[in-house]
Image (cartoon, rainbow, N blue to C red; front, side, top):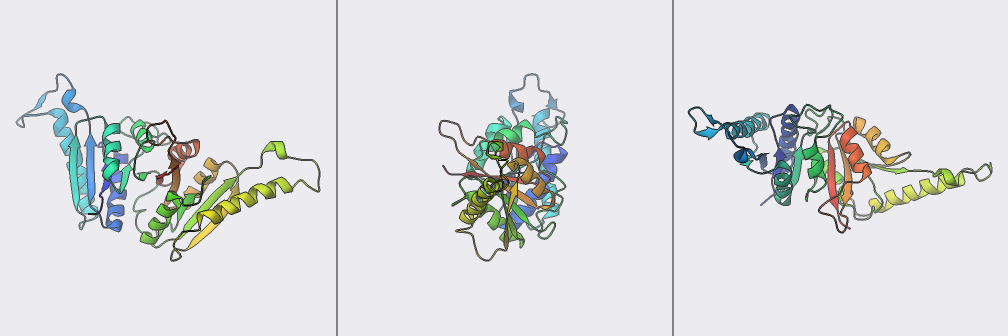
Length: 290
């Protein structure tokens, strides 16, 4: 049985926009959509009982949140199998557990705290660091972006260990479903310590670093499908800035996250952390081995 797409909701507008994205994506994949709300409402002392319902107010609110999200998903994608569940535990732990049996986990940028759009909600940030499946944080002007042809490309950041990259495979799979090309981007830097005043050799260090970036892109493309159009690009500059710039006209930005021995789950590096906060489009964080 195909693993469901899971979307975490909390009733906020960003989470409802995440429902839109997840519904489109689940339809593209042909999998069920599971709408989840998690809260410790049953542990709150003094919770009042909703009049005539014999349920705590928070339980009524939770059920209303998932029902509203499910109706929104069904209106958007009538053919979609939509399921809901209210979980009585901390959202971070609930969503990480959900990621163990999901094809993709989806959240919005922030919750009901009212933080600025440039900031990422603590739940999404924590879950992105520990999810066991690819996780998408829906950012930017993303209405209907799961539909093919909205912006016309998937961007993937190629990391330090490009061979066999799960992020690259994920990007190509997404591109095939949407019928759009992949742009693989590798940033490179010219360390200041390698600068020289010798006019004859001034360009050599830069060319060396750029060549290494080209080789990384080549390694990343060793096992990619031939039926998806693709483009490779090297860019001099900080990786976070390069990828954020590339996100401005992309449907999805894909980056990998590697496990660190001795740490629980995935620990986000500076690049993933940076694009999650500043990308102009939805960001997929894909677990990498090793």
